[in-house]
Image 1 (spheres, rainbow, N blue to C red):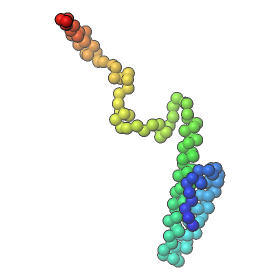
Image 2: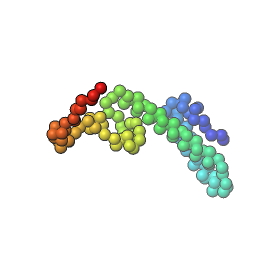
Image 3: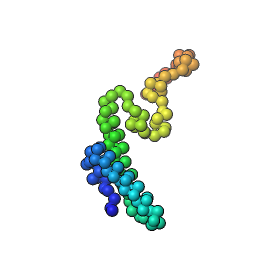
Image 4: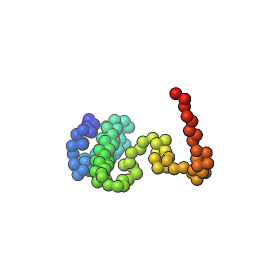
Length: 120
């Protein structure tokens, strides 16, 4: 049995994918029973990979539906937010960058920037 193709699975509905998953799991159970009599059974590998493909497509479709549900809303789940980089996630916001401490404010008042006249 050849492996199922991911692009074929993407066209199927959720119910069809669930049915295919159940069939593949039954087939895997039968193959595990057959493995008791025959030590080598390479078909198990293919069936396990097919199950993984089906589960991957189910999860992708589920995430897409959740993404569509939260599109345009103020808050979204953390796992759907943009990952970015660790440095960007920990960087200060524009507002936080613009804030100055009381000590810095007093120092700026006490020692204003000097203005010099330049001879042309």
